[in-house]
Length: 459
Image (cartoon, rainbow, N blue to C red; front, side, top):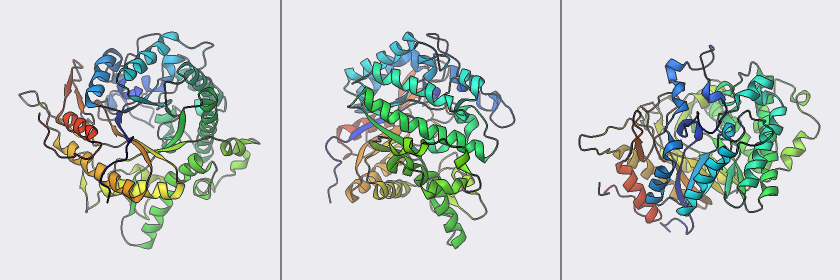
């Protein structure tokens, strides 16, 4: 069997603005929902998550050149980041874009170009402009679609020819389900869940066409975050629940992104309401006329489904331990085969090129007395997942590239800097960067196009 990754396969990693960028007091950036999250009985408190730290995060704003120099040193060929909508439109619907915000991303792209690193731009990752929530409740209103498209229009025109891959929304299949965190508005009933979902789907479909209109060489894809879902037992009712969960939150959304329609897998989530009264004439045509080029996937773990849980509970329950796998410190099942199964199943179903946006291990990292950070556990996790990805490619799955999560340590949503994913360690007080052992290991993986996965890097 061919043990090599194909020529042109792209290796890299990911970050997102909310957890990485910081600089929230610079360049007239506006307030987003990520800047003001508080306890309202339906979300995290500042004390629980220290959301104030998102204002600084990993301070990438002040370390941009240093960070990208490190990515260039590792040999990245692709880098996925997200733009902050409020850095470009501080209120979300300003008459003119904020030039200082465009300049910041221009500086980022210029630095990436220095190393021939192809950018993957996610346009929205849970940082909706606060003004749009206050004005009309964000994506609960159709008005938000036009404001988002205006932002997409400016970005895709201004950076024409410089961004090859666009993903309009991060992990779009989870956003309506955890709407308070993702879009700043709590959905109070199934009708509101559908409205948020539907408006996001319309915005995605229109964005694919708009980006292609503005930049014919750009590629656009939807993003599905999903676990590999196994039945908790061989009880047919548990198997049924696993099947329902995969259809509802995996294939249901991928059907939109690849087949451009609301399939039965998607519609059955909303069978208890009359969605026809919530849509406008022509909405399904908008989705049918979307222009996707690839499907982007995010994978971290497998999970178990049981008949005692609702379908939504299955996806959110990330800590139901599988006795046949190891677990991370946070109880996530470490399952490299699940990654292969995930890739094969999605590709067989859709026959669409796959771009992997996130795959990684969250772990506490210790700086040794000599300054080293020996994250062998991360190397083991990534190595096993890369091997399984290679098997998926040998099976026939077309994969554009592989981005780990994350390039540099980010400020995790719930655990701050306690939970780390990066190849580069960030001191949470001084923001000094340190290369971890995995930094040198991944550099070797990239240089060998995935052939050398040995954990024998000189450190």
